[in-house]
Length: 123
Length: 194
Image (cartoon, rainbow over all chains, first blue to last red):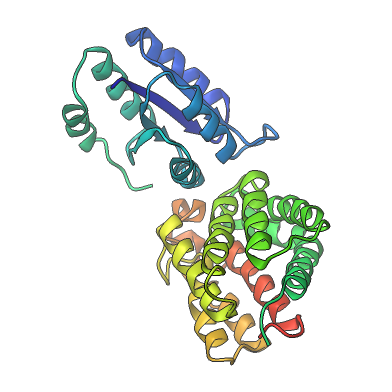
């Protein structure tokens, strides 16, 4: 079972930029993004999150987000997708970077989650 | 009396009218302690809901479901998933009950689970957790709605965008609580549900 990453943010340029950063260390990883609302305003969109899950080549996805409503839309989309989604309340950039590096190195999910533990923040 | 497709749609259209009338005020409240878009987000969402309901669904479950899916897709801010979840939980519950108190109680459980907020966190949960028991006891009044909304003013926000302000979130009414107040006012004014 392959692992992928989905990045969710209130502004579309944020996950697009973060993807560039992650691709530098994880060329083979499937990274999909959901940024901004359906009208491209600031906010998050459940439809976009669901699309990002579906576009991801992996069937098991680690999801990272910036602020509150992003988390809620990820949770709603998680209930509507058949893929297995893991959601982390961690520092957005550092968490996604850690996961990308470790997935690319072939580290298993349990080990990745142990590393993410110390990046947990209240959101 | 009980909930019917007709009085449910009346309630929601009345709520939509109140949001439209007060969208600037709601956004002003949100500008003080949040990201300033609550009124406009809710207005966009409720306009889409009223539009959707102009073709009348056959059952109250379908009405709730359409409201939920429309709000989730159109609102944008945190109120999309929160109000969306509330109506989705009412859709589920309406398969076995048409009692408005039981439906709203299921909605409140859903809101708390989705947002992780508890009473006292300065969120819509503060208004819902005070007023749902009043509705169940057939004691909802305009005064109780006003006082539940006003009570959020002196709280320090623990959830949502306002929580980043810490102590400085005090002294402002929570916008989600105010819009929830309109939802309950609209319910109180709609004949035949309570």
